[in-house]
Image (cartoon, rainbow, N blue to C red; front, top):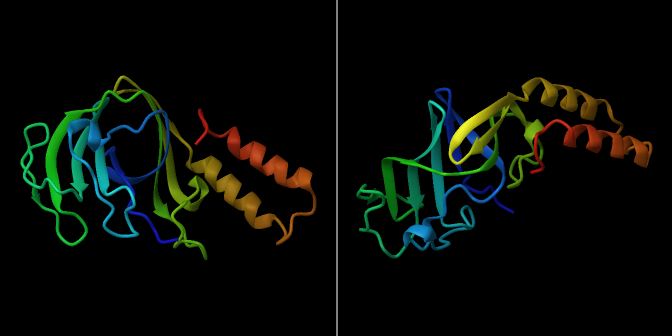
Length: 183
């Protein structure tokens, strides 16, 4: 499986990878009449969103999409050429997204022998935040970096083969209790 192009979130002036969402997909271009096409194995969805948290509002800042309709405006923004991976790019959209749910975001991906896989667990990132939104308004933000450090240390201390199923279950239970929601 190849690395997938991931959605991004600009939060407090830094760009993060969207690791997980609990709730509906924040933005789906099909709801706006843009049907994405899978062009390569690196983006099965056919699009990438870049969100931004401005003040307490969740905004769609950019959309990169592969679609047959390349000249359609999106929220008053005209598309530009999408380069090699996409047929159209919309920048400076600044459209408020009425998302209700949580986003798990991370940056500073740590090295891993499995870094090429599409799934990046939260503990593989140097910085992790959990953002809770109600109708597009950020109502709670939790820094999860220290807990991820603790989990990484605990994983590193485990033998290559778990000694017991209780040890495995204990680690999984600890990990699940870190977050507000399941991802």
